[in-house]
Length: 294
Image (cartoon, rainbow, N blue to C red):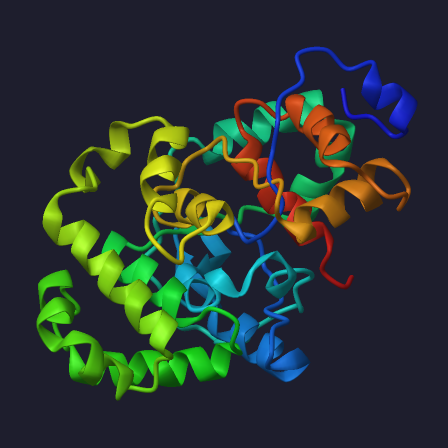
């Protein structure tokens, strides 16, 4: 029951919330300090094709997105098309087992997604396996262009080739700062590493913990806010029902698709997303994709 007007939306029953901000697998533009050039470059490096018996599917790699996670919602709005950006490079695909079921369900219940899902085809998430590296990259990428974040991360990798929390702590503040990290980012990275080493985080249990419990643990770490935690749930843990209401791209997509471009409040976005349960991650992905130039 997709809705087209605010009046209709307000009549919706069983309404739940969502969040506003990033790429759940959707192609996104990384419009941060690097501007459109960095955006296009990041979009290209985040995409590829995988060719198999099931055909050629466009996929999105989380690596480039991780590097820009903490640039904030404004850093991940519309996405540039990436046709053949990486030619026939192959990626190891991790297709969430719920994806097809979610798409079939959403097509039946939401008239907007009924159009969007077939239009953009069988895309899906590629998740990263290492939680610490994912989060560390998000810290490094805060408030800088994707190109700058990548350059910084390469220096960090050179200083900490094993990319283990213990190695970061052993390296210490001075050597991390020598990689080009600001004082604040250095402190954030060390605090993150300390959380992993101390056992304060239940990393081994995250896959079975509720979304909000994982978010609570992550946001207790300096430098990690709710938006970044939600992106982690989407891209690293591949959770099916994340609604990032702090994401400007999602809010904009809901405005354009359901309210003819009129301004939308978080409450109204939450009402629309109630119809997406329990597949809000998948719906968010297609909302992001709907912002791409045709």
